[in-house]
Amino acid sequence: MTSSVNKDSNVDSGLAHLADVVDQRRDAFKAGKADPKTSYTALLFSKGDDAILKKIGEEATEAVMAAKDARNANLAPEQQELLVGEMADLWFHCLIALSQFNLRPEDVIEELDRRLGTSGIEEKAARKASGNK
Image (cartoon, rainbow, N blue to C red; front, top):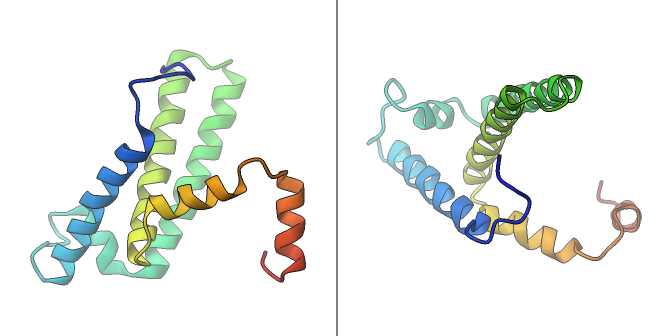
């Protein structure tokens, strides 16, 4: 697996590129140019918000189970691959949800940047005080 320091990797641009592809497929579906019978992305968009959100829940559960299995296997290479694969599925479906609501991964990264240097405990307390969960 990739080391934690990988100077050749540009996560932001990789996510942005994938989000561009998802947005293009969403737009093609809306224009009647993508068939849900032949495009998984079009199929997800054809099912609407609730189905997309349900799929995120399913993928999150699978990611959690893979992480538990990886923990129990002391991160054997095959368990690492399984965990990474499940996380990739989760991230992909999160990109679908962002696109469904006309948002981008850059919006999420901007929010994470905003929180950088703030204690998670303090940030959560501030959200709670303002009425946001």
